[in-house]
Length: 140
Image 1: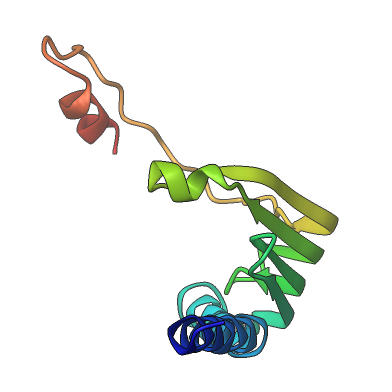
Image 2: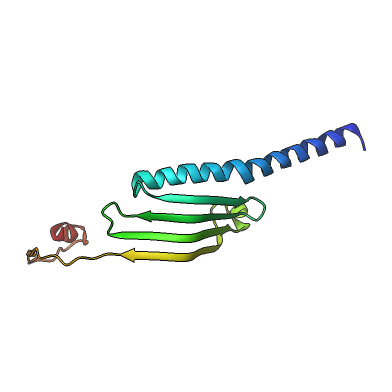
């Protein structure tokens, strides 16, 4: 083997090793950290992601122990695991193609309370001639 081929093979295996280390260890940590932070900011401060696993060779992302709830505690959602498998066509089409999305062990709860407050609705007398946007604004 010539020295150029040996250098190219060495560079290839070094890059493959870096890709493997970054994909298996660094990227799941970042997804867990920033995903949990986004859930806590936008949904509820008690949102939790326990573990994230990523397999860059099969393009599979698995989130274990995902739980979040409404700030008013009207609803809550917990999943034992959420798995997303991205298809190989993603590389060819330049947009995401999902082969599988699985939500396992879901625990969804919604609490509704009866309200004694009476709300009177206004009657809409005329329907709009063009589009439904103005009609929806009247309803709101």
